[in-house]
Length: 424
Image (tube, rainbow, N blue to C red):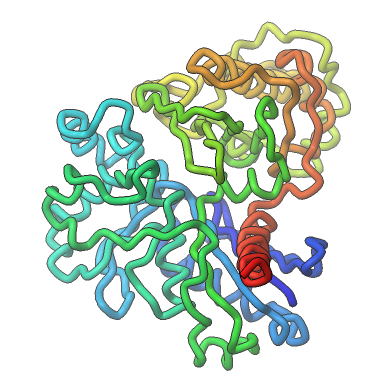
């Protein structure tokens, strides 16, 4: 039996097939034509490209698949699953007015009251003219999952958290149900739960086992956490991708939307974290992979550069501070590219340090160590710089890709069901 994880992240899509022993059998990745202007058409094309690349002998042995998508990226679609709205991406700022409206009706501490919430974007989308054609409000992962299962209107409680779903009572709260167009909201299931077998025509077209189960998905950052293998408190997981995401397990739920902090239900624990708008996306503006590797060799991570950078990808910050007007701070630029890169890496490390301090201030357990995933995990100079500032050991996750975490999600769910049958 094999399991497929599909990750639709901030800059592209990835696929990972694993065996029952959790070993990686096959991986593939593609980039979006325009990451900043990505559309549902790009996601669907990416999905089809990855499935087309799947080796025939692997597709025929797939037992399950799951998809993760960027948190807070949403759209409206009609009864045929065709988009009938623009897609509001995770960094889209058009729903700030609706977020202010939610603050007056959402319970204190609700993730749905933040400016980046899916619910604010739901309100914005349903106020547009195209909403009259809508049959479903869907998160990115929901829509892609529905294309494969043929079962629309289903989400998971990781994606639905920021759209107002009550992850403690496991229901849509009354104040959300009372909103206009709440009939468009999805049914919410446990991440990894089996939805139904893959659509027969899709299975035949891509050479996939027709009995392959499509599972409810998760968010990309949660999938990356799952991939890390961390299952105890006191260990932080930092994803060094286009954006900078911090997560750690706690025994109590922590919610502080004013700082972009929220918690996912995660088994018997809570997964608390936040995502900065700063990240390695800034590095890509100035350097390619080869340049990053060569320039990093010239950096002494034990030395504190006087450059005081805040490397945002654009305007506005959400964690560890919330400031929709904050601007990137990337000046002055020294003549040396190595010094410039040193300043960028140090600025990101300072944000990471402040982020974990914010989580501790709000009640998260003290850090004992940090595990790193994402593309930036391979940079040794950055690792040592971060280790100095964080004051705890920093290591790279054995598996760094969110797609691996999504594959684990459906594998673990399948094994759980097998155990349930055995116990019965």
